[in-house]
Length: 594
Image 1 (cartoon, one colour):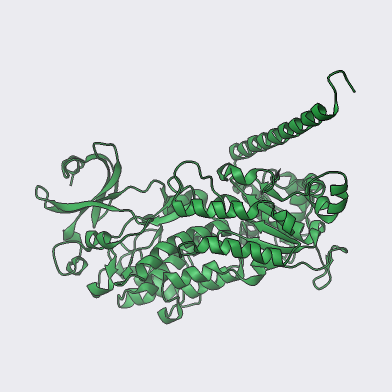
Image 2 (spheres, helix red, strand yellow):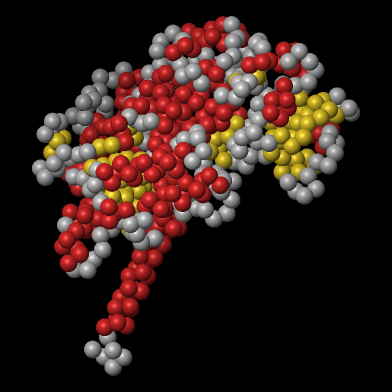
């Protein structure tokens, strides 16, 4: 069908541009007379097996979509049959954003909190499908069929936009594999196609794995849609259990997340999560060690059991950052009576912001060790819930538990995802959750609960969270300095076969603006080069080659944007300080002089 015929296909809608064409359907961006944007999908019945239509000549997708009612499933606007072309069509809401396939190609890897939260947002939708009275199996969950949207809801979410392969339980079995990449299908669907919620769980597990580790769980050698003749390669690749690494280039992976991925990718469907809801519940409950940490006495700054440095002694370099944290936060919490005697307030909370991969979470954990208080770590997955008001209840429970452990340092990672700005369009439940955060954060320091938060996007945080009595101080955490980079190379090269001429000081000089994650990746790349070349150890040439190939993940333009934010926050802080000083002068100094 030509673009011209598409323009004439549906009355009252104007075709703006093509989106995607496949054997199954053609999709176009359209607009109505009020300029409302939507998606037109024209089905191609000659390419779809008869059972995909439920035994009739009408596609199942519009029938299924019409029965769905979920805020994060694009609404069906209309459907019908166009006599001129002999094609069935549907028109659905347009979800603004970027499909996950393109986003993964652009950003390469996702930090664990972001990947976990995005997957949980998608699982919430799929769990709704699986737990309907007549359950729906999506069947084609892959990055190209998911849009990452942050514009409408003020919080990133993954939203499924295509239901072309979806089936209800009552529709009976389907044999078609068309348009489904075997990489996202479990072996039982390749051998004898059988569709159930565990099929979707496997697909979601593959997507989450690739978001965290870039590569697919098994090396399959395919980048394009493979035909049935090639499926033996997929089945053969999965003969071994999946290996889930314990870290990515952006940091360590929580053990509970690794276990959940392994379970989702189990070869036996009976060993997988029963449905997306069970997968969601597993991601909602991080392991105890990642949620609650109670450091031992840190007066000696060495962990007696492991003989490793603790607190700031474990942070190489970054002397200016450590000075700010000590003077603005640590000292006040260590000796609050002294500060009160001088009329100085105890900080209620502090925000660490900066580019991704610069060690904000690591610094926060070391700060908890340095302080010696009970330490609780919270991220978006900790409070996510599929139930109405469930997240608000979890937020209240978190603060209640922190108060019972007082004095307690409550570390909130990815604060922008938890407390997004309420200005503009925001889904109602999010606004209620933000209000709950703000209420719990207000002057919680008086109860012995002190806030420490981190974010890559401070501009997206609700401004009410950054006022005095909630988050009092904002501190910039930039790329590691020379001393820190040198120490990172030493740590990551340790326990590997090394040539005696490795100069970590030179490596540090050559990696200015590289983040902690970048340095770990450089060392891994150098080790891989040494291994594949047949060398007996890692040489300086391998490291220099990796540095030449791998540019910093944070571009100079992005660093400049963060420096501008830093200047803005410092200017705001200095302005507030000047206001306070002027008030004191007005109170204590007469117009005629002292």
